Length: 342
Ligand code: TYM
Image: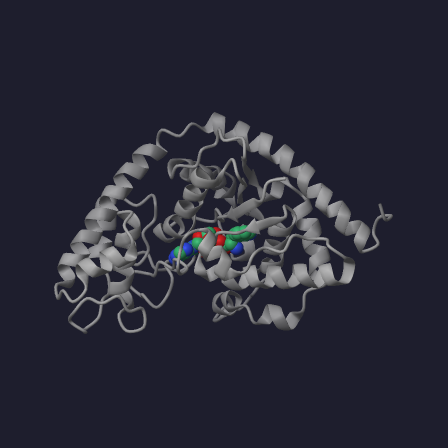
C-alpha cells in the first residue's frame, strides 16, 4: 500500500488566486513529484459547499468547472496513482462523520477559529458550519491519508483530525492512520510556512471567495487586465520602504508572496530583490504583470480541457474510492459495535 496524499477544494464559487497558490499549485507539484511513490487523492468536498448559503442551481456544474481548473493547473488525470472524485459520490463520508461526531466534543469544536470568524455577525448559523471540521476528518481518515497539503487556514482542522483519530485509536485499537502533524506537512510539501494569500484591499484577512470583497479578491476567471488593475489599487501602508513583514506591512508582504509564487522563485530571492526599495508602485506593477501573464496562460489552458476525459476519470475514481472508503467504514462500524467483529 502506498502512502496517501489527500486534499480537497470546495466548489462553492469561482476559485481565487489564494486557492490556486495555496492549494492547486502545491497539489499539482506534489502530484508531479510524488505520484508513483504515493497515491494522490484530489477530491471536491461538495457536501461542504452549503455550510454557508450558496446558489444551489450552479453547484453541480461549478464542481466540474473546478476540476477543470485543477487540470488546467497541471493535474495529470491519466496518472494511475491519482484519484479525482466528488465527496457526495462516496456516501461513507457522511456515515463516518456521524460516528466521529459522537466522539468529538463541543468544547474543542467551539475553539475553531474559522467557525468563529464565519459565524460572527450571522443570524442563522447552520449546524453544518459548526460541524464541518468533523466531515473533513472523515474525508481524511477514510483513506488513511498521512499527508494533507492545505493552506494555513485549515491547520486547526488538521489538528482536530489528528485528535479524533488518536482518541478513537486509544479507545478501539488501531482504527485509523493518524495524519502527520503540521510541521511535518510543511516539510513534506517543501514549504517553510503555510501559504496564506491575503485580500488585496484588506490584507489582515485572507483572500476569500466567501467574503464580499471583489476588489480584494482575484478570481481565476477574472479578466486578466481587470485583475492587474486590482493589484495596482492594492492597499499598502505608510512605512515608505518595502519589507517582508506580515505584522507591520501585510499588504506589501502579500504582494511579495504572490510575486514569488507566481514567478516560481523562492521567497528569499524575491524579498532580497525588493527589500528597502521605496517605490510601492514599482512593486505593484511587477505583481500586476505577473498576475496578468499568469491568468492569460491559465485561462487559455482551461479552455482546452476536455470534459469527457474528466468525467470518465471521475467515474472510475469514484468506483475505486467507494471500495476503499467502505472498507474503513465497516472496520469502524465493527469497532463501535454496529457490526459483528471480524
Ligand atoms: P477551501 O475550499 O476553503 O479551500 C481550499 C484550499 O485552498 C486553501 N486556501 C488558501 N490558501 C492560501 N491562501 C488563501 N487565501 C486561501 N484560501 C483558501 C485552503 O487552505 C485549502 O487548502 N475544508 C476545506 C476543504 C476540505 C479539505 C478536506 C481539505 C474538505 N475536506 C480534507 C483537505 C482535506 C476548505 O474549506 O477548503
